[in-house]
Image (cartoon, rainbow, N blue to C red):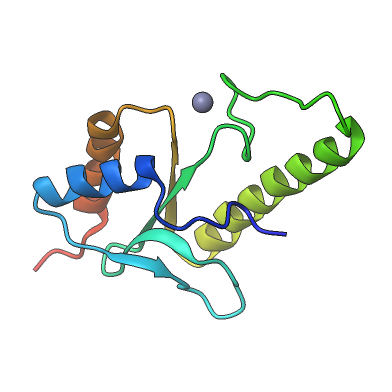
Length: 127
Ligand SMILES: [Zn+2]
């Protein structure tokens, strides 16, 4: 039961490229909390910001979610569990002082990068 087994999806690569272009440096596919077994897509350690790039189908984006017609019940359960897991991840991170920025795969990468950059700059410890 994987959220989407592929690690480096096209939307994720596009976002990373935008972030890099803006001078931001980050780590990839990290677990940041003991006991939270999630490899987060993009991690800014000192700012305590994590970014997850979510596939519209697998994570039920409000604009593009769709329900497969065959095996409908099984899919409904599976997708609902993904969404629940995403919620729990955001909550656990928030409880530990982290911010989870969730980016949909349909989002414009430079727009998403701007959101991420703003969060990182605000939360980065001042020298
Ligand atoms: Zn979408």
